[in-house]
Length: 454
Image 1: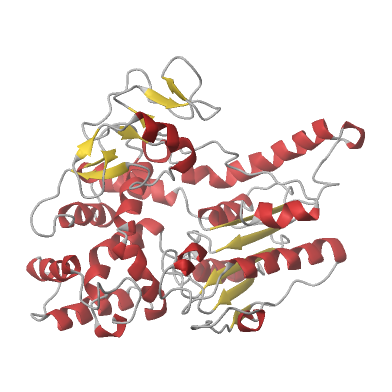
Image 2: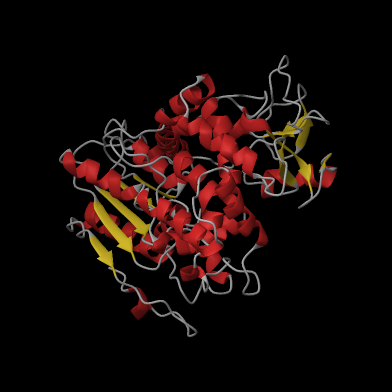
């Protein structure tokens, strides 16, 4: 919405959203209610719902709340590209109905640009694989994309980060990093994680600073950069890595409404409290407020393996072991991840990719960089803008310490769309790939001169 809609509608473009308000499909087991297509709550069997378990499904004992992405058993990420193409075809049909005197609207007389960011950025790149000539251009921003050759999957590096970053971020170079310290002190839970890693034989060092340095060195070996890790601190402090891994493990493994991998579940929950029944007010707000990833909107992650001083360790270690093992659950998860791997786009399709060099959620080294190298090795010529000092969430720029250290990414996304428009409608050449040098605003206001937008 903030990218395609904000850019396209003022230019008179028709904008089709792939998700089109379909919602994240929260289903409450206790009340047997889901979200009807108008956003209101309804009991299963009384109305068409965004998502509901089958009549004979028995939800896992910890699953008081079910979510379409995690519990449908569909592994929807594998079909994201196809969904984008379906949205484009629907848009042509809608234009036929809205403007019958100008119909038919086809790929031959209508310019179609697929554009989105993050997971959506990966989706538009996947759409380019099988577009059958439908798309005229693709603009992908900070895409979560797994290259056909090379790269690392989100699940791989998210589970690694969940285990190691709490300890690694205690290294002294991160002392001034936002979210990495609590009133200047080390977060106690992160100190405990270093001790756990040592006790489990993952770290050899005895003292805290050497343990942190050892954990950091392991992350460096697997491809993490300090530039990315400085924005990782926010995701680690907000427990985002575990939240992502819990949901995606269930989706990739296609566990459906049954027990989620590694003893997890979703339920109504207050921060730091025990699971409880969701309230009618919370259920009513899920359609508009719930992202599909817990915790949030009154839904929390139930950790059935939590124990000891480092209570989250057993669960996240289990999630990581799923990635590293070859048993049946691990193979099922690996198959789900492999289904999301990209294929090549058609050779003549114009593609512009924009990615922040400080992205800590979808690091450019694991996603865009290997994807672009793979395309270039197969005689594709995407444009890549790597933006210095830009991280994943422009919304985080409002947090103390973020806005003065980082620059927004969306202005570069809008510029990429401008350049794609000029290429398609005015015949201008696509811009060259480049690393864009920016200057953080520091304590002053942000100006265009600091961004150096192409």
